[in-house]
Length: 146
Image (cartoon, rainbow, N blue to C red; front, side, top):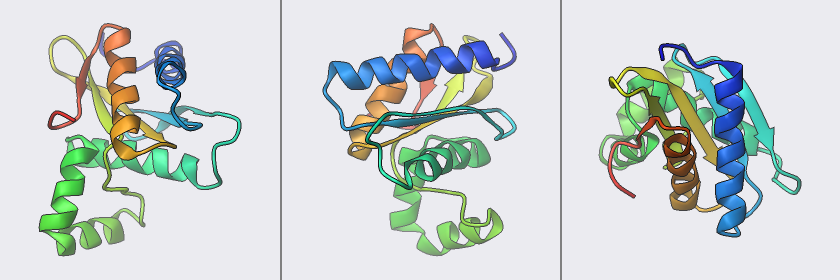
């Protein structure tokens, strides 16, 4: 597999929503981006708050932009705040350095895209992303274990 299709992106979003409902997560918003950082699908559950789409996209976009899960970006934000500030300046404020942005890799390790989730705690957002990716038989790369 070398591309993230609309069909696959929709399956990922559906798997993430199912994972969220299974653990009674707060209403989630799921953004799936391709390897170029372009939005393929966005799903927002009823009751999800106002900025959740932008946050979900920002988590996924940051993962794509730097080639690592947003959990590592959160660590970077703590250890190198000037770097994250510069990165957000370059990316017009598009990076959200909080867990919940997970790279989607094929079995060979190639990056197909990223999924970003927002709505519950960052750890639960990330857990739902990982569950979704693994649920369709792909490799989830969150950077470090949750």
